[in-house]
Image 1 (tube, helix red, strand yellow):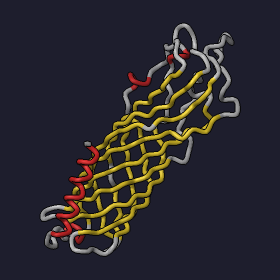
Image 2 (tube, helix red, strand yellow):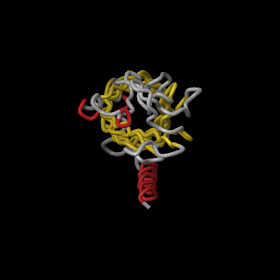
Image 3 (tube, one colour):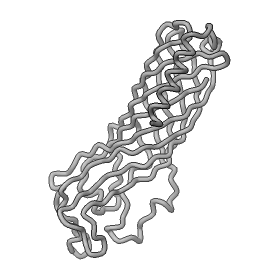
Image 4 (tube, one colour):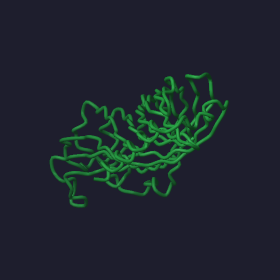
Length: 249
């Protein structure tokens, strides 16, 4: 019901913008202008498994078996949200360069299904490893714009972003934990490629731009410095994002 209501509000804005007089054009003529953004994100790990990923995990010190064999290993989609700023530089009537630094709060989840419960100390057949992340991201892209039709303009955007995790050490410190209670960890920073499409809607005093963006981190983001039952079965871990943004400029 909430999703349907959100789409109804969005289409009401679009209809109002299309019927309105030719507003908000000045922002596109400025060499540099600023704005802000609100984002909803959905994250999903893409997992490349090792050849022997099903094998039980053995204690590296004693050789004791700590888990049973894995039957499945998969990522779960998880939501997040972000807030940020817009710095837009005009290149021409149909192209801009955009820097949109944003602070993103998100969780990422991988599920481990075991044939039997792990041990008497952790009697579960399924374990979810949640990576809590607070990211500072710096997306830089080229925005390619169509001709303006009244108070509407479509666009596409291509670029890349640098992401850095600023989560406190208290949430990621597991040095004193037993192996079964270790955390799955990601590298602190990584690069992603991005592509997006959206529309500029012009109102009397501002421009609003709903946008859908797809992001993909091509390199391995798995932190393997501390071997544990959760990173050992994984050969390569990449991250995909789908982001819905509202820009106000």
